[in-house]
Length: 90
Image (cartoon, rainbow, N blue to C red; front, top):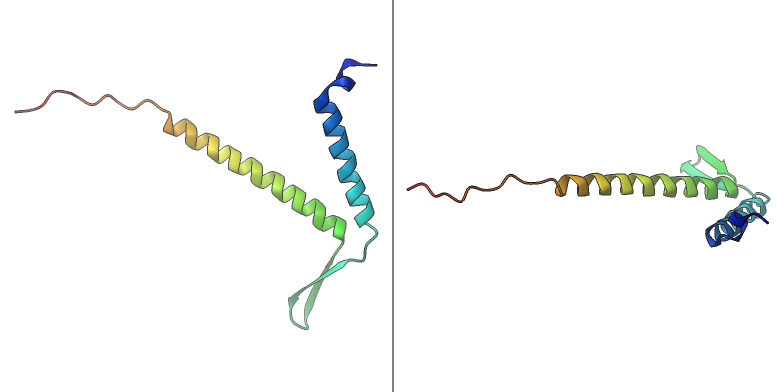
């Protein structure tokens, strides 16, 4: 058996991927969700699995954006500041 199959990260990752695939597959069979955008005029029908996938993609992208902004801000904060002059003018 390859050594990467014994790695706990691989095992946990495989379990999470299988669990997400199970959730999407089971919810694919449910009736669509109806969202009314304008009363009596427009209605949007979405599958439950599309809502789940959309929420996962949005959460992933939002997490990556926040991490990028956080790292960029911390890099700017740690830049060296010019030393203040200790001489006083009389």
